[in-house]
Image (cartoon, rainbow, N blue to C red):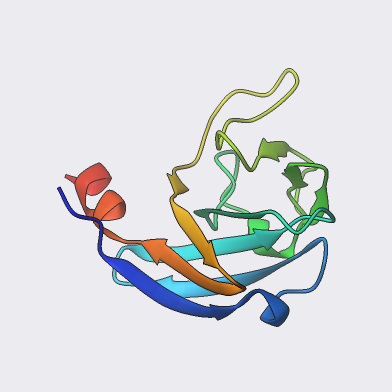
Length: 111
């Protein structure tokens, strides 16, 4: 199945170790930029109590939820440490700084 790549702006729109929230028909997506300029996209709600992960602290390839300090892997969407749970990850493409997310994967995962 072909991916439906949606433009979500430029990497410069997201501060280093920061995030941006993108609203889609399938819900809010948090797009993160690491200190190494890697970009990841995951659902913007912690699997614990639904905290806004886009407002969390980014460190290495993980984000710490601002509500209860759960640490979520940006690569896998899984909670790290003793916590259990996960969020969906969304494919991201970085083409010379232009960022795209694949919404087809969201629709497939929602079915």
